Length: 288
Length: 324
Image (cartoon, rainbow over all chains, first blue to last red; front, side):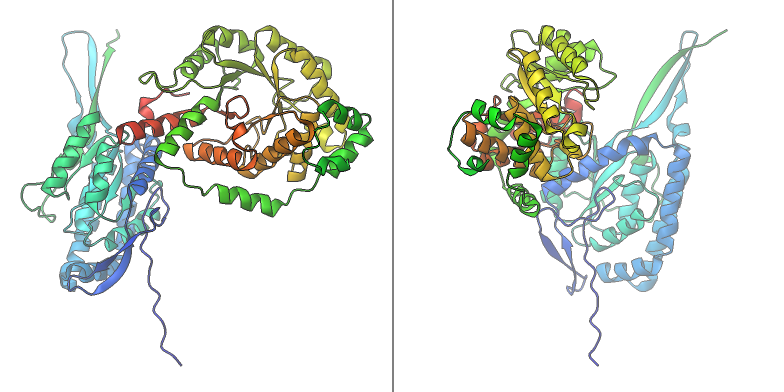
């Protein structure tokens, strides 16, 4: 009796709710923190990025038009699905980052808690960012928040799960859709996360995940006229500069990379949500 | 009958027509004597040609050629004169920010809106096409269909897109279909006649080939795949079969007929695949708006976006083009 062959997982991209291989047919080797072979991951091309933007744009009307309550429920559902896969994610984090199992479990728990925290914000962000404005006339003057649109995200290289969740959740909770370039060094948890997203009632295209080189893909997204905002959290200073210049053409909102390392376990605050919000103000005459 | 296979025997369309259209039996004999279409072969050939890679300068030429072949179409119950005027403005200047973009071949509307379209495109070289003959089902009497055509022609249509009576065709009453096309052709006067086969309802490629020959024998200037109201519409293999038919018809009779795939062509890639198919099947003699048209509306925005991508090096978005 021969020894059983292990079944290796193919790590693909996540675009429009489906798991395609890269259009380019390329892949790259992902290693553990000790340098051992882990898997081959797809190496996305600019055309995969283009397809992802089309998918994100297509999903935008439905997702931004859903009620805040509904979006909150869906994000809570992502937390539930992630919770049921704790052990798998912990094992992947141990392999990718070389952390202890205890630490990895803590990070997964923090990621689940982060999702629950953001899920709660879906119907509250309007209350803190919107307002009823006093004006010099018989009008109701109401400012309310609206999502910016399609957001391209360069995920942080460190924190392959918690960091990733911490950049995706605040963008989608307010109704944006996104194209995420996962950590080049540790992309595997991002693809496992997309399996979670695909089974969480999240409409296809709301989150699209590309693995590969941010230096290659991000400039195409930064220059794309149908992308409305950029989150450069994981970009190197040189890449961030290039992207910000390209983003000027259609006045994208840009979240610059942090100057020092982020502690993903700390309280995230609301800045990541409010950066990708627009304000609409309506004047309405006061009746009798 | 047997003379069909002798390519180059240009004995003239009128002789052939007189021979085969003498009775329903003769017409049936001719159409059923056409060689059968190898379905698997046609599908594989079309799929193989669809994989051709057209890039950079060749792609640029293909995009401009495709734009100049578009029949910009609106055939909705909700069409208004304003919508037709807006579409005509787009037909004349597809990208208002860039005068280098060629104008489209024609606009295609319902007969009652022809006058509006004629006025809107006057002097631009854009033709006005009108659907007629109880479009899209074709279920009415010959008198009504002729009147419908006359209405469009009187309003100034340069081209008439008629539908064949698929019910009669499928029932084997080929002579009825033939005579209807002849009658509509007469009603068209100097206007060009495009004959819509509605291939999605013809069931087999053999029927597509027969209907193509029938339409060409009866005097159609163009054969068109579909109304756009039935799925599947203009698939690659169906277009391939029709291109073969016009090629063979030219060789047999000496008369050249155009082809117009319509419906389901949405992306630049779809359009370029069609152009490859034309070049490889009928030959580059058909790579001209006089002989090949793309019946579509949404494909134009994609062509313009791809053109802009080539000019600026950045991907464009639908926000920067008119919605239609």
